[in-house]
Amino acid sequence: KYKKKHNKKLLLYCLDLWPDSLTLGRVKKGGLIYKYYKRKSQKIYKSADKILVSSKMFEQYFDEMFKINGERIDYLPQYAEDVFVPVSCVQGGNIEITFAGNIGTTQSIETILYAAQKLKDEKIDFHFYGDGSGLSVFEDLAKNKLKLQNVFFHGRISPQEVAHKYAQSDGLIVTLSDNPVLSMSFPGKIQTYMAAGKPIIGAVNGEAAEIIREAECGFCANAEDVDGLVVCIKEFINSDKVQLGQNARKYYEENFQKADFINRLSDELEKLR
Image (cartoon, rainbow, N blue to C red; front, side, top):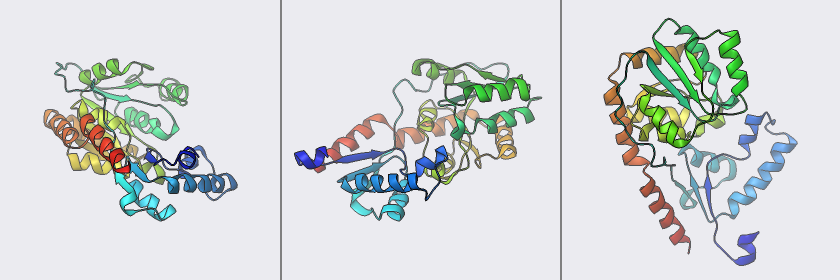
């Protein structure tokens, strides 16, 4: 409405896919609510003069769903804040694996917990930093149902503290539910993991898995594959962690730096003037 009233150009930066993101909240695809938001989404997307997407797979979605392609869409991945940098930290004792970020149903935290159960006799500790709708559920699963002694939930902490915890970790872990919408997305935490120069262990599909493998910075199983994640963690334990961390940082510097993001965004806005 603002664009039309004031004769302005509109640039839209897309981090989630609408209307399909609604299906993550159990809205039925093809139902009345879905159809309503599909019409609304289509109107907004088609009114944009430029659409920037945070995942390469979003381009295919826009083409198939809305017939939007070509020069109107470009890939612009997210960046990590400057607090996330490689920091040398002397490790000792158990292997420390860290998850940071939102703790909800789409993050498939249970995949990590069941993997931790299978690895309970190994010298590995799993740390979770963050909050979310699923925190109490997963805390109950870990403590009362699985009786895990190797899992620790620490709650929400500041980005500066998260960066410090990354430095203390041997590896960082990312998981997502097995869902077509999520497989097209690229979790922003991966940029922070790479910026910190740490190996990445994943149980994810699609874009995220491709990036981890392309960067040669860790090991990745399919989403919700507990046994596959256990295998990845065992491979990680016996890997060259320093080299994997260096690969992660190198990939970040080549693809996800903040300065590059700002310059690209500035260029795109200038083109619309």
